[in-house]
Image (cartoon, rainbow, N blue to C red; front, side, top):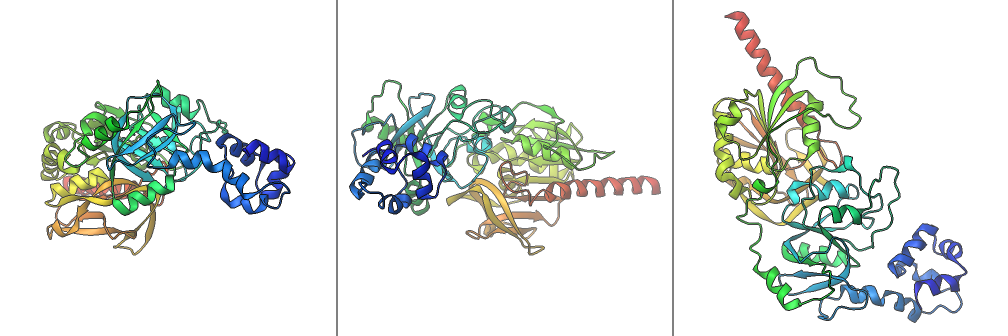
Length: 459
């Protein structure tokens, strides 16, 4: 019995909604997905004429979609997610057709901000599995982009994308993906994928949504298996934008505008726009340089502080050109503040090393403890590499730690004005517990400026 027949048997959409304790909108989504969630089956079994066999029939298509061993596409399958270990997941493609996007498969636990997540340059080279079920329900708009282009290679979701229901929506997610030439796949067991990544670590994968509907799984498996992975890969040169002046502040900023702003050079390794907005909101005059900038180019702008942004891939690869530039800034006695990839690069510039995590941290609900104050912050994160605390010299102190796995989340030099955190204090999406770090950076520059003024006055 299909979902429409079940609804009719129960007396209509309003009646089945009341019976199961949901809204009629939820019933509409059942129709669209072609299945009734199993948690509602007990209520439906009280309806005369509905049997367990009838309910099982509604889930057969979705079950077939997510079965990892069937080489023949089941009915309704138009896309497939293929892992390097040979397993695969059938689903329904949406967005732009493709010839197979291959990268690292990861999962994100964020409950809001899918557009900000997809445009975060730190996701370059990755396919995102969303654990939150309602992806696409608010559509897309130009204000929620964190970069000009979609950085992620594609997305994996459980439920089919519904029509947008939000006054800010300018374009449905499906159309937005087409504009960015990216594909998504729905009807997939995202819980199963998340457990797999939790237990086995990062997996190379390929998302294939062919226009002609033809699948050669042997060739797709080979393509996924042949991809080298993110270790040793530098993607900063692909996502960093040209030099520019940034003047926009955060949305609905209520902080008073400072009479004197601190001149900051932000190194763009894949910077999100809200990072730059946050710097402006904190009182900075922001000049952005691509992450490939040399120490000489940075110092030529006469900064009072240098900010190191987030970014994708392996910090060891980016460090080849980034570390000498960062060291030149510190040698010039300029304060430095880094986040995410910038945190890892600062650690390497101070003499530490980095490594790939067994599981990355991606989402807006990551607990971090500030070892200085004892406070716990709920943070937004997106990284697959981490700083090796054991490699840090005795001139560097650990300031923050992850309460998930104990990995490093922050450090500070004891001999230089340099500090960093692994997480995203600008959020977007996510909580704003950590905005104080931007203010701390500005306070360092204020103190240095006041000292210069006092020194001149006493000269």
